Length: 250
Image (cartoon, rainbow, N blue to C red; front, side, top):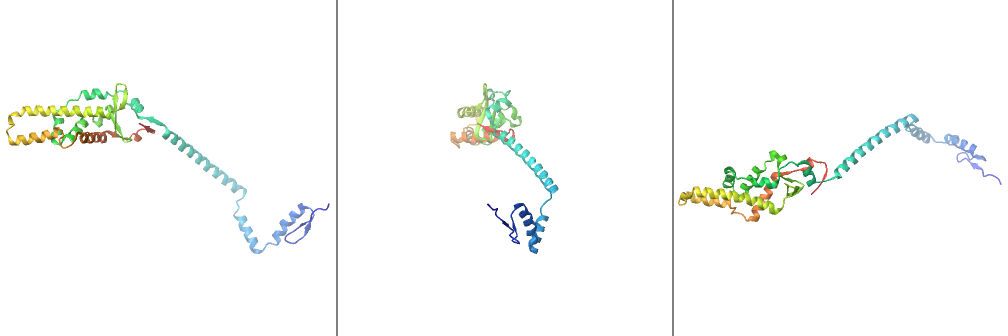
């Protein structure tokens, strides 16, 4: 069986062996190129890097790739840290173990004349908030038995005998009520000292105005509680994200 002849597409010369055909076509195609085709081929070869240039490019790309891998690894580690969860109660138990309990702090509250005058000068709500601020000074934050955070609105954490816990609404009401009663006792003392002035018109005005402030007469009990709680929260709150690198749990 005869072999198929191979024909050059440029000069149509025929070959029986492919090896000779390939050599001929490579040379013949160059001879038959137009001026423009030769110019295009020269330009293409000029833009093609040599072996040394290719080696340098590979090295540069390898260095960039290593830098990117290191950056990805760093970002991955940071993402893993951010995903770690920390329960706020556990964090408080770890960092504030030696704090006096909330209950003992409240039990020791004694309303001074200056604190009572906060209520008389301003009103019930603002006066109680100012008293609470003096009881829990944030310039000594590390020793406070009560904390609140941006991440948990209107919520307080307090130090108990068994550790830190969320302050219940009833316990917060009891604390406010205790201070209110102490303020009322101060008012009664003042009233007793000034009972001889009951028939003075000027005293009657002062008496009525002061009593109104001490009992919080301009607001309902719920309104007073809500505003005092909000005022205390805004005063105490801190942003835990500025302190720890964890996803917080409450």
